Amino acid sequence: MSIQIVNMTHTYMPGTPFESTALKEINLQMDQSEFIGMIGHTGSGKSTLVQHINGLLRPTEGKLVVYGIDLSQKNADLKKVRSTVGLVFQYPEHQLFEETVEADIAFGPKNMGVTGEELKERVHEAMRLVGLREDTATRSPFEMSGGQRRRVAIAGVVAMRPQFLILDEPTAGLDPQGREDILRLVQRLHSEGTGVLMVTHNMNDIARIADRVIVIDYGRIRFDGTPREVFSHVDELEEMGLDVPDASKLRRMLKDVMPDFPDDLFDAEGVAAYLLQRMRGDRHDE
Image 1 (cartoon, helix red, strand yellow):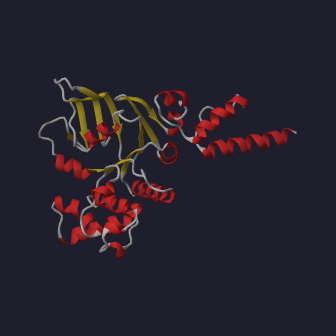
Image 2: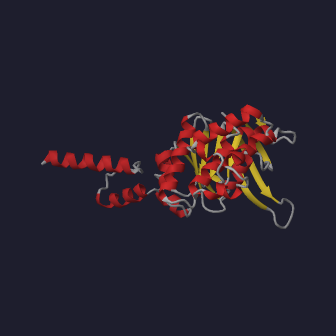
Image 3: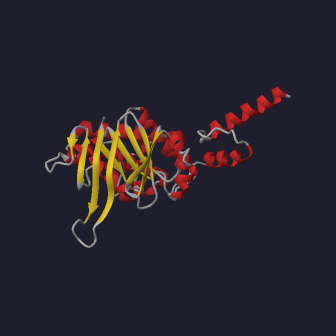
């Protein structure tokens, strides 16, 4: 496994009157081959967890091993971890500051010691991966649309060639087209071999594109499974203050008039296919 977390707990300001435990005995294994969605209510501990994986925080208790590096140890190679696991914060375009697109994308690799032709290659490869045209390289990122600026910010992380990419609400604040563009970008990066952990509040997106969903509730893992498994717990998720995919709500409504409606259908395509099958069966019976 690429990332292993064993009995990890994190407490902010321990031993003070402001002591607060954000994560409690987390046990997780994540592999680079996975596209993982992480959901949870505000303050559930999602951001604290992903910052551990990138080495920005250290466990108070327990063990965290990222690509063979034990981050529980004080002498852990944090620079290597951060080049292996890329972290894209919410609204990353707010962190842009260079005069040109290519200069902003090059900033991270340069700090890693990359120079010359390799630096140029990384910048242009990252631009290609995120769907930025070559002629935008010399433009100011501040003259671009919100969706384009977000692509530039993601490209800056991609240029460091991480093996695993964490994105915190990557579609927040974007219009529908911009959101769809970013989701396609993330899917493309995953298809080319990058592991993905995406934190989001958009259940429809996560149900559609993730192959695994982790639910965090008050610092603990409440559910961990396929979208089909996790989103079958409609009542429990709503009790946690979480939304569920629209198709899951429709499934619950249909259960009132169709008691035998399958409990494990949560996506729009699955619900539509089942209803079509039922309609054809009813016509055949007639």
